[in-house]
Image (spheres, one colour):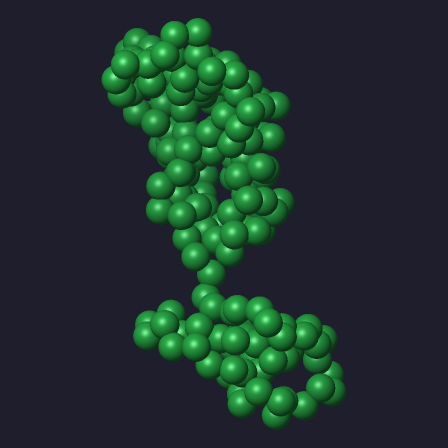
Length: 183
């Protein structure tokens, strides 16, 4: 069954021109999106959604993200106020990423994917860090994103701040993940 978005205000992504339109979205592998003059589309054989007062455009992508940052909301302030960027990393972000385990990675990924989808983003590029839970971390994120329906391109953050062994594990995690996904 096709989807008919009635009375939408369509924003052309190439010109930012606003157009009142009915939008027909067909199903299947060879699906199409057809714009029609508002109020002219046939209602038969379509699921209809009234989009009066709604803006419709192509989906967005997030070009750089840190999935684990979803857990920073409501986090208490660090014990010492950071004086520079390195101290922000040291007192906040590196402390957070070291505390991640399978469960917190999953919940941060689900939270991120739902927030992205709600904001109109259907694709996220993320480089992840969880130095105490490296192996399999990218699969956890990918599975959560796929559960929500958000596309993704993932890698593990490459750093030697936690020693050469963890740096090698990070490289291996990215390599394993990309090979598994045929990327």
